[in-house]
Amino acid sequence: MKTTRYFETVRLRPDRRIIKDTWIEAAIDHPIREQVQGDGRIRRWARIDEADGRYLRVVLLPDGVTVHNAFFDLGKH
Image (cartoon, rainbow, N blue to C red; front, side):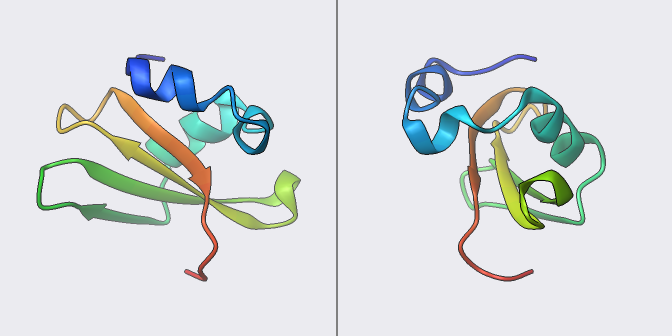
């Protein structure tokens, strides 16, 4: 999985350490929703049953491959 330096740094936070690579890959490969930001970054969401049905948001760079951020969303989708 290709990632940014920012992602690697933020992933060290306690609330981000629990996010599994397989969950990130699921959001990338099989999103339930996708949105392109004004800067070209791509947001993708996936419902993660193993995480009590919470929604994982993954932010990709405009290349559609590089993970810039991943976190559990507070909102509903």
